[in-house]
Length: 65
Length: 276
Image 1 (cartoon, rainbow over the protein chains, first blue to last red):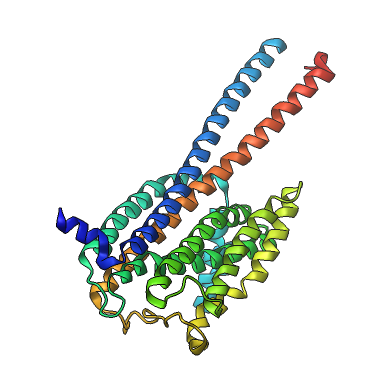
Image 2 (image 1 turned 60 degrees about the horizontal axis):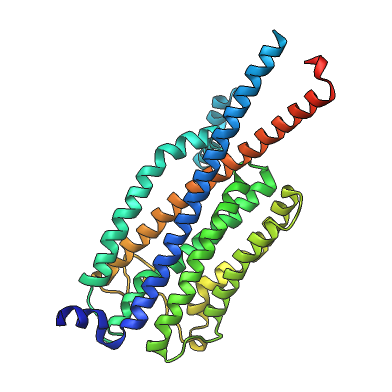
């Protein structure tokens, strides 16, 4: 346990080092979360629109017949 | 004359190579082809990013030794220096994409530039904050207004300015053009940042480059390897995220055009239903 506390304290500079790593990881993970969520949202939107498009075309064909 | 004949006539191999790159770039410009190719590449690059990050962080936080002068704070280097490299790389790529978009009207160039901007801003932000957190215990100050730090701050504002300007116009083409000009003009800061610690060495607290030449770096192997692996991790992360964002932008464009087509069809039905 002492060893872990000693490691985390990093000779007294732990707060600077861990804050730096935390900021970097937060930014990197945050960008991935936002980008992937946006990507999935657009994929879903596109699928819904394509389904509607397909239905409309079928109904158009039906009217023409 | 067929293209192969033109290539054969180009006696200088550099012209041939240039032409081949141009032809391939043009083929790659097709969004459908890009979606297919990026869909194949994305899982591999993401995997490489995850593995190199895991290995790089383990080497940086556990295996690498403390510095004789900076002690444990040197571990900040492994996330700070690759972020600075990637910030400059992202900006260069963004400015180049803007130039291609403005000159050749490459269909994917604006998409690429717009997708790079938030990632580049993220790298620059990491570089600034981790640099500040490294500066306090080593220099005794969070910030100095010297050439290197100030020019990196301006780089961050350039990324932000590009994003704001891109969305500031009702007409997206105008927004892309205005933001592209800003990105290209701002490119002047890239060499200023790159050489600021070497040319203005006496007027800065920032140390000179330790890895200017890979053959003779002034950094020990036990620190060089974690640094290079972290740099590879950042690069793989950049490529993977760029592909995701570009794919997302292409899907967004498809969503917009489908909506417009459906709205147009609906209005035609409303105006003249008997013609259908």
